[in-house]
Structure formats: structure tokens, C-alpha cells
Image 1 (cartoon, rainbow, N blue to C red):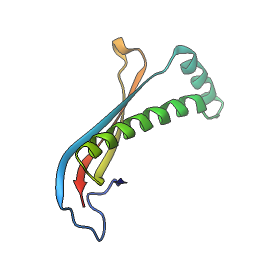
Image 2 (image 1 turned 30 degrees about the vertical axis):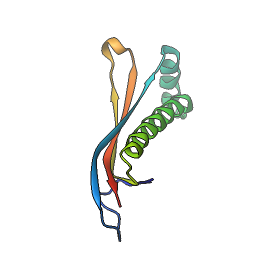
Image 3 (image 1 turned 180 degrees about the horizontal axis):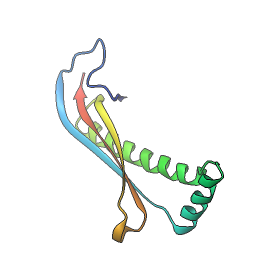
Image 4 (image 1 turned 90 degrees about the vertical axis):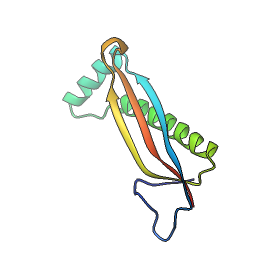
Length: 106
């Protein structure tokens, strides 16, 4: 599966547009991670635990999007976009990672 953030791939012609595909991943940041991340940010350290959780959520979202494209028999996904949203409110400190793109056949 070819995955790009561009609307096309140089030297290739799209045979068929198969539709928009999307994937989501959620992470819940607990209070202890939040406090520790705040302290690390103040002293200039990296918040590796938080980064790992974001990476995991992004990978889950990407895998979900790819599965949906494969179900459509796509061999590429164009114009891929990644978005992070803090759901807050009743969801606590939950981060949603959503990835969208256009499934195509080359």
C-alpha cells in the first residue's frame, strides 16, 4: 500500500477513485502522566510516555485506515491527513487521532 500526503504520485495515473477512508485511535491520558508531563516540560525534558501513547494511537488509526482501503481493493491512499483532537469534557483528557485519505487504484 502506497500512502502519501500528496494528491497524486508522480508518474502514475489513477485508474479508479474508491472513496474516502478514515481511521481513529483514542488515548486517555491519566492524571499522573499529565502531572509528570507538565513537570518534564518545565525543566525542558521530553515527555516520552506521552509521545509513546500518541504514537500508538496514530499507528492504530493508520492501520484502521489501511484495512478499510484494502477492503475496497485500493493499492494506494492519497492526500492523507492526520488530526489530533482533545476531547476533554466528559471524556476526561482523551486525545483522538484521526487519519483520512482517498483510496485509489493505480
